[in-house]
Length: 233
Ligand code: ADP
Ligand code: MG
Picture 1 (cartoon, rainbow, N blue to C red):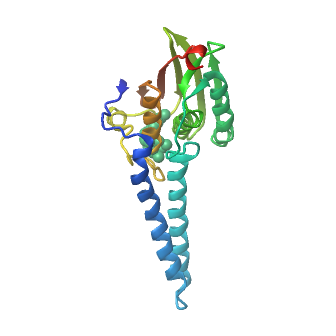
Picture 2: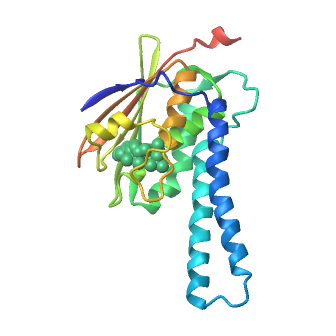
Picture 3: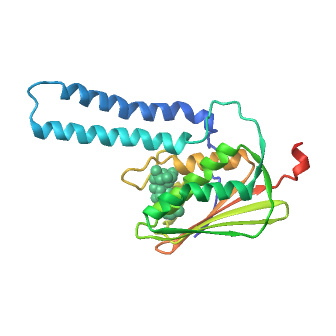
């Protein structure tokens, strides 16, 4: 099943998302606060106590994942200035950052770079956030290990970055719902990773395609207009 994404006319910019995200982070914090308050009560039995502690930890983990998917790198309120991004350097950076997570899940990351130089216009931090979110999903789609390829190519003044995994793949319905805020198929998912990635690609005037087969794997293809080094200076 192959699909071009951007169905999403409604796709919000990173800063427009801020309001709904802070709401989503506030919820688990409020819930956790409630449990801690209950834990203060003197006549609480051991079983209840453990239950409240487990629930609090789960809620705090949730708040943490939301922040990770949304603003590990990107500061949405920052006045972002466009910069020249060296695609090779920054994808090397992303591959390095993802290495420990990949190792933990027995995933090997391979790089196939078919160009030695390619520049685009964007914000480095957003670029990192975008590809880390996509790579994280790819790794999470391979619970029994597998292969993740980062491929870079260029053609007709476009840079093409592909993330190819050998994971569980997606159904047509799952592909349709990619990028829909808070839609997740994971027990501890946020449903924010792809939405954030898509809005960053859109801001770089790029395009995303996804090709996926159940139980075989998924390829995300991101094409972004190239910038000749002099364009930006
Ligand atoms: P989350 O990862 O928190 O669930 P995302 O927005 O990052 O939220 O992803 C939404 C859903 O898209 C995931 O729950 C998963 O089902 C699906 N998905 C995204 N990338 C892949 C992939 N490479 N392989 C399989 N499924 C994927
Ligand atoms: Mg994700």
